[in-house]
Length: 126
Image 1 (cartoon, rainbow, N blue to C red):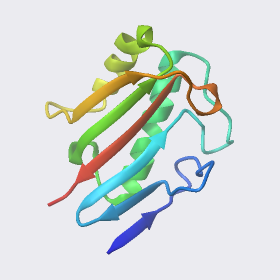
Image 2 (image 1 turned 180 degrees about the vertical axis):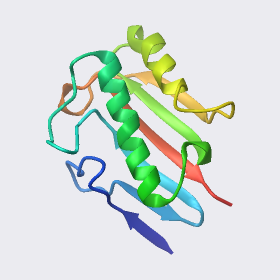
Image 3 (image 1 turned 90 degrees about the vertical axis):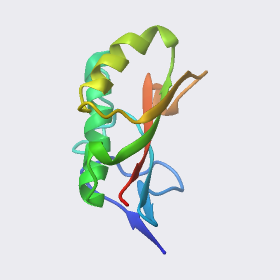
Image 4 (image 1 turned 60 degrees about the vertical axis):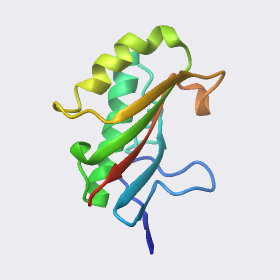
């Protein structure tokens, strides 16, 4: 059985997908970009602001699903350029305690809406 997750605390999907799905203790969350859910605008003031907005959007999906950052077991970070890695990595890491999820980080040719950062997560509650 699966449960579709939707929250106004994160941006509405911009395509035919769900914000997240819970199935058998797993939370599969779609990639989040730096869209401010309050006004639908991109938060592009700085790379730091963009990354924090992505993480706040992830947090909103986690809260709606009754999961936490500690439940995340896997993340994928997509960057518009690998030169952004150090700054994004530092901000990303600040949202976790001493237990970090498995992860890969890749640079891609383009991301939705021309953003610099997109992050997807998988969480688990056993």
